[in-house]
Length: 497
View 1 (cartoon, rainbow, N blue to C red):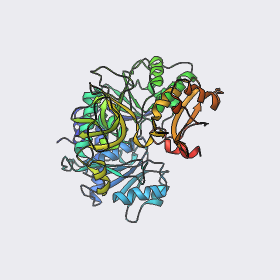
View 2 (cartoon, one colour):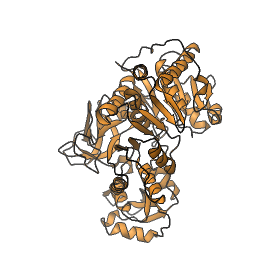
View 3 (cartoon, one colour):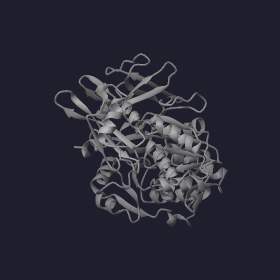
View 4 (cartoon, one colour):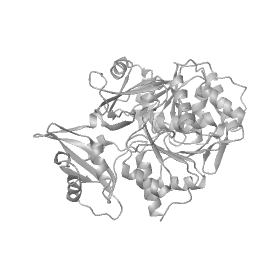
């Protein structure tokens, strides 16, 4: 089987002078990328690390992430990517739980890593451009042999139901999903410029951004942390052809364009994809009108490498859905007993195929609960139509039960985004003695807006059934978000108490 390490070496041999990575004025060609990654592998092997050992990566979207990630792949090591914003105790948990032997962190941002690193874990501080490797000429290196089912990456889930769990993504999982994304979904070529603003320590940015670009020899232009004005500048400056983002990024680009009085020249943009959470239809329409580029929405999770379904470019796009199952992946909607439900009925989304993880790292109980019968239970509620288009209704645990009626937060949020003053919205359930749960809404408003909570309640009440009308509305400066920009309902719930 071809691995990610094989893909880098093949691309570097085919187009050694083509730009692989850029960060503002800095560029790194594929030949130099492969050479520097080989130097990383050489150093790790000389330090006594062996295939299958785990190594942490605590780096933002900078060239050093890509160089060290692929160095690990060449050495046959297992990458454990982590959010650079993690604090000491969080770093300690990830490194201890994974049994990591070493960790790479960004120089100047490595204090929490050093404080949290368990005894025996070697901390390597590196600069953003991995400049210590720039003049290295390592001996020719063949990738360490790896089998299809050997671990490639351990990605820790967000831990919404307890401590984070490490999803074991295999060599087959990672290469297959990246190649599928690059060639059969995104149709990437060496002429493409991919926007790298999704965190590379997250599966969406890692698979669909970095790894897909390496497989096809595309250029990945990096943004260490998403800022809407800077992202808009990069789109025009680097002639980006493919933008990959989550809904809040599309909202941010729209806000930046409106603040500037219009979009700069983004005519090179040929496709946009969205994932991570449901994209409000009103946001989709507004973005496509302003930027003149269609958004294709897909669906996946860390445990599915991530892509499971997609609005394929070769099929009819159906806004509001997350498309159809991708090649070599099966998706069905099941009841609590795991029985497949009739088309159109709402149940839990289950996935089986080449993309599904091997399990959770050293957690057989959680693995058995998540994959009881070969089908991974996603925890998401959805329905599938007669042509296999999947609609995600909501997270199973986010569903609100008000007086025996099911309220899906996404449905209420879609209405909220129709309000001209609402910039961001999140719907959560709050306890109620009489009804079990009530609907609560948190919103942030567009600049200069003066909508009141009562006006927003009335707006929803005019458009949805009475049991879906919010009992309380919180107006916030901005809503809490995770590292990918996804709005965190659990923190919204806590901040509203």
